[in-house]
Amino acid sequence: MSKRTADDHGDLRLKGGERPEQMDVDMDKDMGEFEDEFEDEFESEDEIIEAGVDGRPDAEREAEEKEHAMEVDQGTFIVGRSKLEPGQTLAPDLTTYEMLHGLNTPWPCLSFDIVKDSLGDNRKAYPHTMYTVTGTQAESSKAHENELLVVKFSGLSKMDRGGDDSDSEDDDDEDADPILESKSIPLNSCTNRIRTHQIPNQDPSKPPTTLTATMTESAHVFIHDVTPHLTSFDVPGTVITAQQNKPISTIRAHKSEGYAVDWSPLVPGGKLLTGDNDGLIYMTTRTDGGGWVTDNRPFQGHTSSVEEIQWSPSEQSVFASASSDGTIRIWDVRSKSRKPAITVQVSDYDVNVMSWSRHQTNLLASGADDGTWAVWDLRQWKGNANKPQPLASFNYHKEQVCSIEWHPTDDSIVALASADNTVTLWDLAVELDDEESKDTAGVKDVPPQLLFVHYLRDVREVHWHPQIPGSLIATGEEFSVFRTISV
Image (tube, rainbow, N blue to C red; front, side):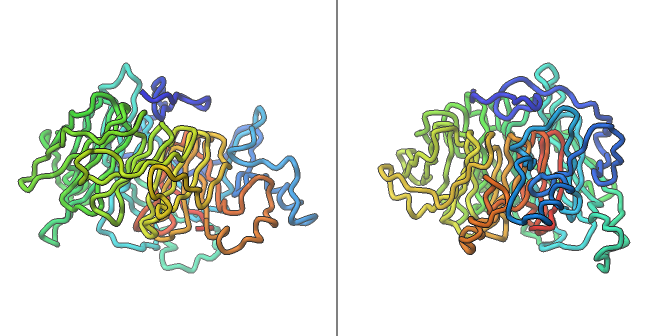
């Protein structure tokens, strides 16, 4: 069992600890509505701080801009770093968002994945529609209530600017009511991590087969075919049978629970890696007959739990793994020894997460338990003896990094989530293209590469939507769907 426990902000666990209390939410399993933060009227007498990119109150920021553009008052409130005083709450600076929606679920969903759809790439017209899969984490005494949820978000509207720059063709749709539709599959165990994979259909007129791999607290990994559940959202009269709710395969190789799972992006038929708290990694492959076979010879090398696995986006036989032993290891599945080809000690703390750039495939980003995240050039990783330096390293966050992901089309943009209750967006090109920005940064101890700070209590995972530029989904105390005006 990994050592992490619930933090002081609540009982939503990341790797271990007590189960969260059930949220006081009345939501129909098959239909719900988003809570639009920008439509809320704050009636509390508590002081509300408007939290923008740097988290400062608007009045303070305006005064400083008039007096001295480059100097910052020592009282500046920085989201994720500063502490709220009694009676203070945070509210988003709505002028910094193009889209912002929130929703609650009966139990926390601390891992999710976005399903690629047939609605087209590079979508910009509002309102948006998104499809996701997620798994719940009910408290231990109610484990039987856990579910795999297949979800459709629709009616995701643009922020109402009151007529400002409202000359787009979709103005009439901006006030559409966001809708949540969901189909549930019983799991009876908490979801630690969930990832999707799509198998192309030989008939181009039919949708691809969408699979999910769900790593659970039971140590079992369940593979489900959720294609009929996705179809049911858009094809009236579709009936989901009890058989379709059952897993098409169950991986029982692991003796302990795990949090690392990834599908190969280069094997259309389906090849899955899963890692556990014993430091073992197993590979499961889809056979020509449509069945599933797990190789009982694990990949061994880590001395502690495997926290993250990422297949190479360019080499079919290569993958990387990150561990609480502080290392990242590079493997070749063709190796008969099942030992890593390269081992690099990247941190003195647990390495919780990593992301392999899809465009600059020599770049790998990692996030650790001490809040530090770094970018590595894999071309410098020549063997186990060398100790390469990161291309960039940031210690802005003071709590563990629990999710990190490269932008799907911009190789300089990175999103990450931290246990300090923030999602931060970073632009590495600022350092590469504007060295002088280091001397002109407006806020002390805030790197110029930091683009945006989004506050989300107990945030645990964040993903870019691959078909809607600049749009993100994050999960924590609630789901947050947003797009900033800065990306």
